[in-house]
Image 1 (tube, rainbow over the protein chains, first blue to last red):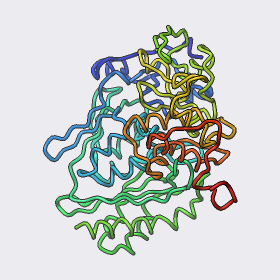
Image 2: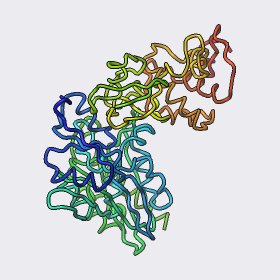
Image 3: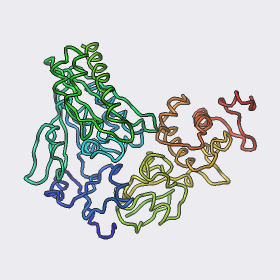
Image 4: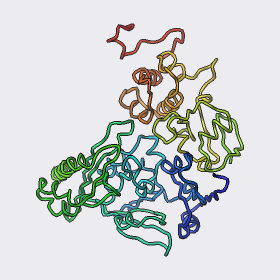
Length: 265
Length: 170
């Protein structure tokens, strides 16, 4: 299997971009927490593997009110942003366990496809609610776009970083399935911007994380917002929970996040 | 690729995408890291990579070229057990033993990192490690004892704080 694999070790972000090229046939290995078991168990046989470990892309920088998180930054390091974006740090601490968080990367989590038995990509929620911009490379070169657009068309792209403006306040609520890793069944993140706008996003859905525009429009009335959130999402059955169960939990999480935002303001 | 395992330098022949777990077990014959779930869920394969606990089943060998790896064989020898190994023995913190090497290495990193004997903090540090014998109380006891600097009498098994309700020794 691995004999035929060409393995590339870029030593800078520029190298990584050049070696990724248009992304055709490239398997990106950063933390490896998702992709390595796929290779080990023979579900994935990369023709070319791009090992991101030595390429940098792992910094977290704050410039004024803007925060830029490198795609290869370990999930654990998001706790550095506890003051800046508490919901993001809280969500990060909900991912896996300490060893996994130290190894798994922000970019890997954001780009993770839906797992076979459970949702993945918990960090999509807070970054969507923060209205993050995704900078990526691939066919056609580098581009920056809203994270939601990136998630819709991320195949063949290498995420470089995500950036967002510091919110006035933020809140996170999740429904977890008790296990060694407390799998996240469903989660909602809320953000209040410095202009007073409320943004909401959910993960644990049928595909990737989504903003909740109907719930945002009704944010002044948490009860109505909770009900409206069901119009914004498509829910699925998996090993953790049924779509029905999620449909009962989503309004509760929306209300909880809105009441937390209210208390914080 | 080069790896230093328990102080001994090795030139590794495995492919760069082979897991560290396979390199240790299959190429180097070091069998203390266990192949449990092989997808990062159980913690039985955890070793120290440059002092940090890491799931060897999730780690591509090529990603840690040049690193120092420590397994329980590197903590101490049968005739000179390390404090963590003594504590696990004295506190009877191993039952079937399958999770033990991963538990001890995660605990070792926790203690070296300045961890306290607070049971909740120890549980958090060991959160990625499953013991299907469910011997968690004694494992936490053993780690706390190392933090406190206890001396261990390996000829007796210590009573556990969690044993008082089943008629065990007080």
